[in-house]
Length: 304
Image (cartoon, rainbow, N blue to C red; front, side, top):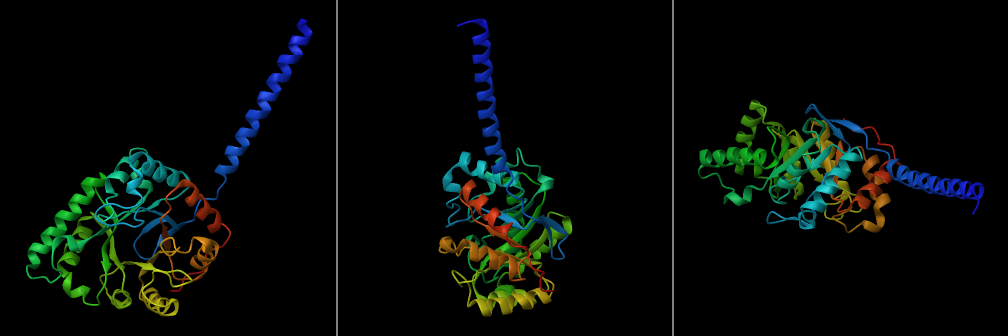
């Protein structure tokens, strides 16, 4: 091979490699152009975060979930991926056992850039009847301290009473509510509220002056919800008019509506009820798909 031929060969090879590299960069760039979710103000809480949140509680119970069963490496990678996609709302719970996983993610995610929601599974503490209210209040106080320790943070953005199933919850859980009020005064908790699995419980929350935010089950097909779509929307409309912030869950009906994702996201964006929503994506691909769908449908003005 002559020197001229050799130079032409090397130049052609370099060009081919550059083209291949360029094509690879374009592929990566295309993946990275997924539009981040909007950053929104959540009711009167003073909290600003992404309209879409990364959930961690798919089929959760006994301090584990599908998410934690992924293991540290995979779940922490998913949490970091979501943050890189613009998600600044992370939905945790004691019941899911996801606190320590997010603690690990916070090694590379700035704490002041994200909103952390978690939930107290008060059933771990025995009967809901406040036979010894001062004892229950102290249990709740220690629980909040433990949450902060597990996550390695000095404050929690939202703390909810988890899975309320009776309209009597304001009487039964008053010591917990008092402890959370104290935590708000100390700046340890920014907003308080409830997650409900009963329409009457949601209705009480809609009028309770104690509640800042309601985590409510809502999708267009009534899957895994607390009542018919019409009944749930009626109660949530009441909550909105009473100044409550509403976060949506079960947007895909806990996975039962995976073949109707686009309809579900369209409804979530247009129903005028939700300040934000949590999605229990179990992979980076699932979260990217949700964000792509979100970008197709503008959020409608909220009922106020």
